[in-house]
Image 1 (tube, rainbow, N blue to C red):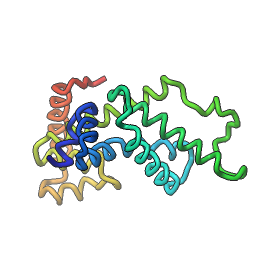
Image 2: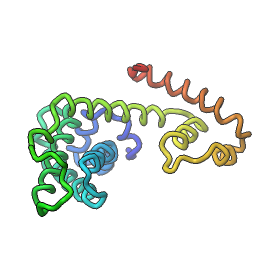
Image 3: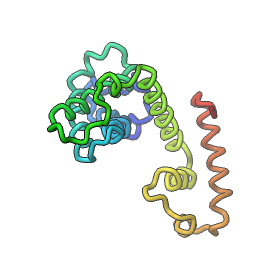
Image 4: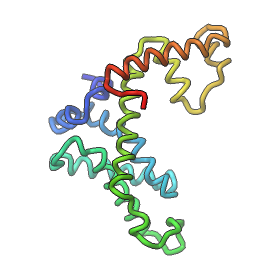
Length: 193
């Protein structure tokens, strides 16, 4: 099985494959949660270098702690909490003149359970949408990927050349592709809200 196959599995099945020692499953798991893990230190004002270090630390913690995770469906919230703890470890190691958050109270900086849940739900929705995009046929998959995931986002003229289409047809093609994507998302149980 390929990394792409594992990327479509729900967390419970993916974790099961990771615990079975499948390297593709481990790669898919890290790719799935990479954006979430990186976003947290960046949100706290840490540098990309610091975010890389934190990602590496959290990856090791996943490897060490995944077998003892009581509820595989809680992996996302566990990662949020673990990543935030790693951020705080980094802040504590820094000299007092560091660019730590302005608030001096640790209680003010630790997010509430509701905030952690909201972060996880947003990540879960993003993961479902990415999986749905992968289920689109061509050229829709490539078009949606270019329009919504490419950095920097290409201009319509560039996309039109890539697909050998008139520039004016990109918008209507995008609309049809989004309709197909919405249909897939509805089948996956994700509503518009």
